[in-house]
Length: 368
Ligand code: G6P
Image (cartoon, rainbow, N blue to C red; front, side, top):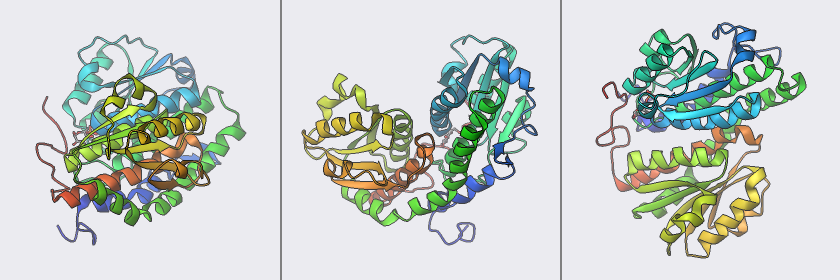
């Protein structure tokens, strides 16, 4: 087992560090002449792609959080209306499905019982099902109509990291491919986004260099029993994943909120020294985030802010700042989530728990 950890003490840390490679491998061979080509994997004809009226992302746990990012991405790039559900709800709620609905199931293992059942229900009702999975030949891969494999390699730690970032890459590829076929973006616009996508792996390497700073902040809050994550837009989706990571392995109670909802309840819980992780990477709502941060600061919160390189504004309002290298807003989640994974990891280590095998949780939930 020591050899399999490749020099790292724990699988989770190894897998966090494998993300630049996972990103590269998931992109490789899917970009041709500067554009996305998924025609080998997605058998949907251009006409069928143009006829899609809505997309349902369906998944569990971390994969569900990738689907939440997917909602923003597909709506933005391809202008197709998207819903995102947890599989255990979707399978029992009698969703409205037609033959023009594309159901995208996301599953690292491809064996999660609820996700598989949701896939079968969707097919029964006439949807076309596309799977994003990390395991070739898994049940989900075998039963879906189309499959996009995430080439993250085997993920051992229960808390998912590299599978999530690879799922995001698969979602960007899908969004760009559909945008292209549906003519929603010009070739120049698509090429511009794709060139940024090509830079993400290198930028992820840069983010990993903040490990020491994040470990320090994680140690400083490790005795707290409650913590909040705030974000807007794509940052909200990433906040949910950061909160899940922290809960899963450090057992610190945490909640992620859309920052605009603060006033509708959560603000009552903010008191002296409560740690708040505030994500402010999205330029369209940056000013709104700054005022939300000021609201929690005014009530004594200890704030770790996430800003994009060059944004000096945020530093004035927070206690510590993590700077995300510059990319386009749409792609920022891939870079923002990495420090959040490290944050959860070091909070767990500080509290002395087993990172790779958290209590009560399983890597793959194959029973309901
Ligand atoms: C379990 C794992 C999570 C994972 C979820 C969905 O709860 O502990 O890390 O996100 O299952 O798994 P899947 O294999 O379908 O992505």
